[in-house]
Image (tube, rainbow over all chains, first blue to last red; front, side, top):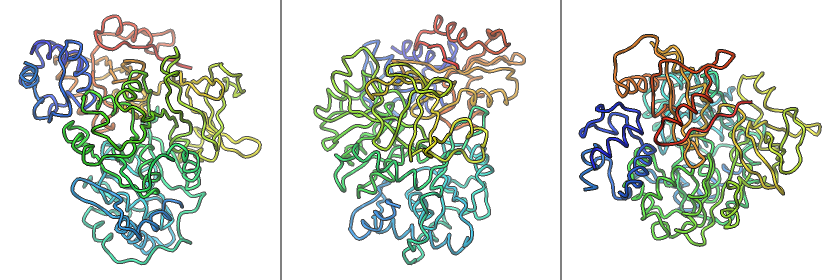
Amino acid sequence: MLEEIIAALNDITGADAGEITPETELFEEGLLDSFGLVELLVQLEQLGKTLDVAELTREEISTPAKIAALLA
Amino acid sequence: MFILEALEHYAKTDRIALRYHDEQVSFAALNRMADAFAAYLRCTLPDDCRPVMIYGHKQSVIPACMFGALKAGHGYIPVDTTYPADRAAQILYDAQPSVLVDLCASGLSAEHTLSAETLTQILSQPAAPAPRSGWLRAEQTAYLLFTSGSTGTPKGVQITAGNLAAFHAGVKPWFARLPEGGAFLNEISYSFDVSVCALYEALSRGMTLWTADRQTLESPQALFALLREARPDAWVSTPSLAEFCVHSEQFCAELLPQVRQFLFCGEVLTKKLAAELMRRFPGVPVINAYGPTETTVLVTGTEITQAMLDAPAPLPIGRPFENVCAVIADEQGRALPDGEAGELLVLGEAVSPGYLGRPELNEALFFRTEDGTRGYHTGDLCRMEDGMLYYLGRLDGQIKLNGFRVELEDVENNLVRLPNIARAAVLPVWQDGRVTALTAFVLLEKPDGEGALHRARRIKSALANTLPSYMIPRKILAVDSFPLNTNGKIDKKQLAAQLASGAAGGTHEPIRRS
C-alpha cells in the first residue's frame, strides 16, 4: 500500500521517484493542501481504498507511512 | 444602505451576528463597533473619503471595520492574508487608502496604520450612532476587490453602494427560502466577491455567520465539527468545498438537518456533484449560479432538475436575474440568435463602474447603451436557449480554480521574474470538466542539479512572496525546450497535448484563445 500511496503522491506533486519517502511531512512541506488531499482520496478510491475525511485530523495523515497504516 | 439599516434593526434584538471559534458577536455589538469605527474615521479624516484597506484573515473585527467605513461614507478594500505582503503592497500603492487596518503585523503602512491592538481600542470607544446623512451614497464605491490581472499585477474592481442594492434586489428570489435568523456558513475569503452573500444577504436577514477560517477548512475534522455545531440553514460555496465534503459519507441530511438549499458559484458545477447532493439531501434544491466580480456577485441562477442531469449538455448557469439583461454577442458586439455560441455581455445596475485607474481596460470591457445602461464584456463564451444560459469556456487564458479567478499569464509573469527561469508556461489540469490544479513548465537558464521536488518546493516558496496561495501551481516541471508556434510564442495547445499523452492523472484540454 505504501508504494501505491507514494506513487499517487508523485503523480499529484510531480516529484521524482525517491523524493517522497514514507516519512515525508506532506502538509508541513507544502506538498498537499485540502485540494491536493482530495486528489489523493480520489486516487485511493480508484485502488478500492477509502478514508472518511470527517474523522481525520491532519496529524493522522501527515506522512505516507501514517496514511498506509490507516488503510492497512 | 440596506445592510446598515438591517444592522440597526437587529441591534435592538439579542441575535448573534457572528461566530468565530469561541467568540460570539451580537448584532448590537457589531453595530456599536461599526459606529465606533465610523466615529474614528470622521474625527481623523473629516474631509477624506478614500477607502480603508483591511489586511487580515476572517478576524471577527473585520465586518465591524467594513460596516463602520460605510457608515462614515468610506469604502473598504478587504485583502485576505492568502495575498502575500508584496501583493498587498501593490494594492496599497494602487488604491492609496487613507487607513490601513493591519491585522497580521505585515509591516505595511499607510497614512494611518492601525494594528490589531489599536483597532481594539478604537472599537471599544463609546460612540453615538453614525448619522445616516453621512452614510455611503449610492454612487460611491463601497468596496474594491483585487483580482488576478494578465500583466502580473492585480486589478481593482470598484463596486458601489448602488451595485450592491441592485444585487440585493436581483438575488432576492434565490434567498427567499432562508429563514429570518438561522445559521449561515461564512467560509469564503473576504477578498472573494461571494463572501458578500454572507456579509450582506445573510446578515441583512438577521442570520448568524458561522466563520470557518483557513485553519478550520484545512482540517476535515474541524470543518465537520463546525458543520455539526452550526447546523446551517443555507449552503453557499464553490463546488470545490462540497466536492471535498462528499468524500465523507457523513456529509448527509443528518449532519445538516436544517439546510434548505445549496447554492454553488465560482466554477463549473459538475453533474456528478449535483446528482450526489440531490441523492444525499432529498428534497433540498441545488442551485447553480453565476456572476463575475465586475457585476457585483451573481447575475444568473437556476435550480438543477433531474431533466438537466439527464440532458446531454453540461449543467446550465441559469437565467438572468430580473434586473439583469444578458446578451450573447459576436466579436463586433452584435447580438446572436438563440442557440449560438458567443461572448456573454451582462447589462444592468449591478455592473461595476470599472477598474480603479485602468482607463484603457475600462474602455475595452465596459460600455453604456444608448439609454445609459451599463454593460460588461465577461470574456465568457456562452450559449442561450429559451433564456437559459450555458457556460462553454473562456475566450482568453483566464481560468477559475476553486472559485478563484486566475490569469495564467499572471502566474507565468511572476515565474519568469525568479532567478534561473528563462521561460514559463502554466496549464490548467482538468478533471470532470473543471480545473482542479495548475501545472507550470519552466525552462531553466542553466541546469540546477536539483531533484524535481526540491526545485518545485524552492520555486513555490519563492512564488509565495508575490502570489496568493491559490495561484501557486501544484506541479512545477522543468522542460528542455518548449514547442513554439509561428510567432515564437510557447504553443500551449501542443504542450497540453504532450502532457495529456504522457500524464497519468487528469486530462489537459486545449486552451481556447481568441
